[in-house]
Length: 635
Ligand SMILES: Nc1ncnc2c1ncn2[C@@H]1O[C@H](COP(=O)(O)OP(=O)(O)OP(=O)(O)O)[C@@H](O)[C@H]1O
Image 1 (cartoon, rainbow, N blue to C red):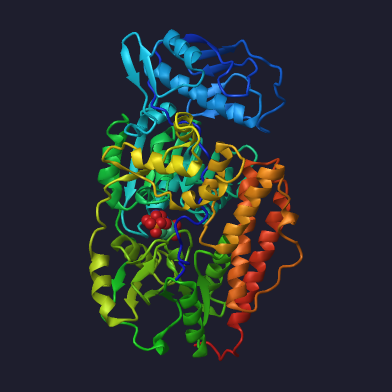
Image 2: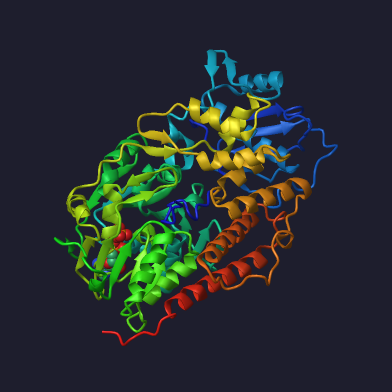
């Protein structure tokens, strides 16, 4: 059975980061002259002068024979995490990436205390940096799989003594409200949330409060003139700019198997004076432990729920007991539509639906219809996609089942999941200030009661994942293996401290297996692997494969080659609906790629407009589904 629940990964949009080397600041300004001729096979660099914080590295003796118009359409002036170029280097993409990596690598060596001449000698000897280096003080090993000190990857944040304020408590306790107030009052700031819906909501809220705020997610970039604030999805968290204030929402997600590493990166890397973390108290000991080595000042503020949440003593009983404001929770799209039909068959209610694979805009509109008292859609049937990001006026949550397929296996809901979903009932200041929770099956009642009354289990560890530069350096010393094998070996050999686990990369491996067949650079493969592609969705997997093949062959991917605009129709069956949802995801993937490989995916506007049409057609299907039967008067 497929999982159509939130899948916390939906909408994941990681940018490739180029820096992860353990760093120690150089004591003095140093100038290092390096001969880079022969550094990367077949590529030469033009002379470039690089600024590495206090360390300057000067590249000389370049053979400019083939050098190179512009390598990246928009070469970043700021490399990331403290490394910047005085002027943008030029060359082809592979060269420039190599140069970046090389530069960071050298900065890392210098910061680790190797003298510049040692580094220089090493490079002249080897051309390509190898795993082991010797210095006058003895052998120095550089193990790229050593991830034991991730706090040192973010020198800009480490230069600050941040005030970290943990806002913790149950759902609906005002944690985010208080953190956002601080953000609103700050001179510059960033909000990082797990979902696009949350980033949208915060951007809207700040702009409305006359605090200009950009919106940046994997799939969109809305820049507001004069903005010093940003609302972003956590994968887009900026760890290179100073902020007065930053907020990371749902921080307990740093324990998520697949996306936790992006929360860890934001936690360790955002250089803000004040860093507000909102989430479950289960994350407090781990965060305190992780931040014990950063020099930050950490305080914890505990919150109580603003409105009561009452687990009921009896199950729902008959479906005729469904009433306005109810939300039935189930975990597959098939069951969602079955329950919707069953409730609507009684003729008393119409149901909005919310589940993870609906386009986010559609989810928002379904939620709005449900909240709107004048609408006839007064009951919600939803997956755990309601757990975050949507404002919902739910009076009672009714669990129809207590286990879900999580992409890997069928498993019981965890205590935090039950609490997160149940906590959606009874919103402070809403029409239903007291929330109730129950279920369909009487045998599930004890689990609901015990979960709501017990604290979430303490989080043991946070996610980490090697960024491109580490994988790249690893690949230089393991030639002739593809990204798939690099990932597998890296994950197997990674060294971690007890506070961290290595992220699950099953999905990435599936993508890498497709890409390893193709003549594209490691960097581009890595990029494709980070895209929001769910390879278990057949249409999406085909879309990704086709994009990658065309990109490898022609370097330019026109949307019309795989998709004919004007052919989208309102679905008539659930199978057609599912197909349309998948097409929406393919179009989202195109947009995602267009933000990263702009020249090669030039049809972003077309993809965006087709995406909106998909959303409208899906909504039309949902509306038609709801009005198939004449409605008796509401009561
Ligand atoms: N002091 C307050 N004044 C007015 N409204 C408030 C206040 N505190 C919270 N709220 C409102 O109560 C609702 C719940 O608050 P909030 O979203 O901050 O809770 P939370 O603890 O972050 O919940 P969750 O974990 O579910 O995100 C929001 O609609 C928020 O605007």
